[in-house]
Image 1 (spheres, rainbow, N blue to C red):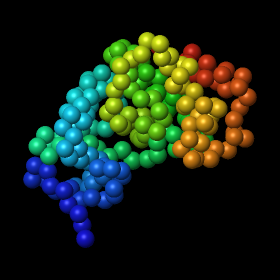
Image 2 (spheres, one colour; image 1 turned 90 degrees about the horizontal axis):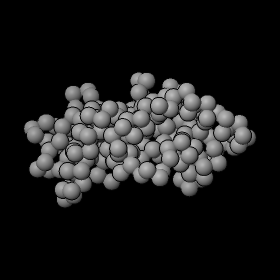
Image 3 (cartoon, rainbow, N blue to C red; image 1 turned 45 degrees about the horizontal axis):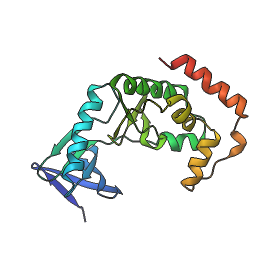
Image 4 (cartoon, rainbow, N blue to C red; image 1 turned 60 degrees about the vertical axis):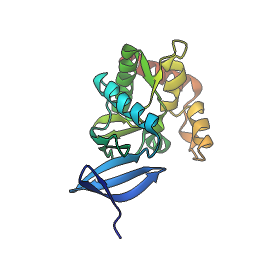
Length: 194
């Protein structure tokens, strides 16, 4: 039996439950991500505020379809595909993805805010790197993107530890020596860091 969620006289059919209070839904052949905040008014208001700020600051985020302040439901386009984390588990990330990553960092630096650069928070779809959680954090002047965040976007010992903490096995035979990996990350930074 189909489960339907109605918002503002529009019906959305639940296709898949993605997590607590999160669903992939369908309406007229289009897929959306629906989040029910239920009684979490503050969480709902934070996401609404953050999505506007992120979009206006130049970050690539899913297009917001609608939100309802009465039922605390937030709906965006559904971004298909694997996360950057999943892609890196299988193979090195394409240079286009890393270029998009450096662009996002530039937007974060210029807006004096930051986002959670964990690769699980990003999906690469149609040549764009989408930031999914609409979560912002204050930019910590002591936190250096190049040394603290970038290593998690390459097959480094830091990424392997992260994968193991998520119970994901990694083929460590793919790893370069520490010198070669540092050289690779440095060359990417020289090419794309602004």
